[in-house]
Image 1 (cartoon, rainbow, N blue to C red):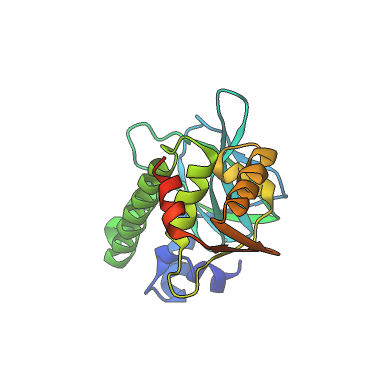
Image 2: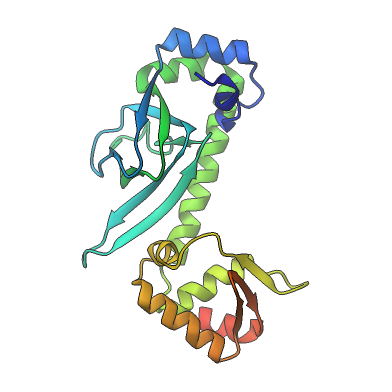
Length: 224
């Protein structure tokens, strides 16, 4: 196992390689390998393990009532998944977890990991911080989805990225389909909405870089 990559996981921040190695060995943690597009966990399935991505990446996704795919989050190595609800009364996966590349995941059994938390205050503190950050992210995600129109979703997303110095907002490292999945909309609808915002003088597109031209109009769209 690549312990150097495991050590980079925020759960193990401040712990030595020897300490992490001892935790893995004593808890009989195991590694599973998944190919790209493999289903790692199904929505509604019981979550009995803390899962840490050692290599690769995954995304959480769900299908809405119309059959449209919505990407909730994308997570890359060396970060944990399935941690925010691991010790909930109803500890089921709220979304499908799908590998987006060749992926290795380290599994800690739920009851054994809680003993590690009790034994190591640094591990416990890290775990609580990560859960708090995840809760904040989910609340922001929920707030984002209250926006009704595609333009208002785009505007709200861009406002969070806005840099008032040079107006540069976002270097697009995702395809339009991936952005559409993030917003929970159809790709042609997303492209049409962005095109209209460019035509109206709100945005400027140069290759894969978006730039805000009129922040006042962008705020108005976000509030519509």
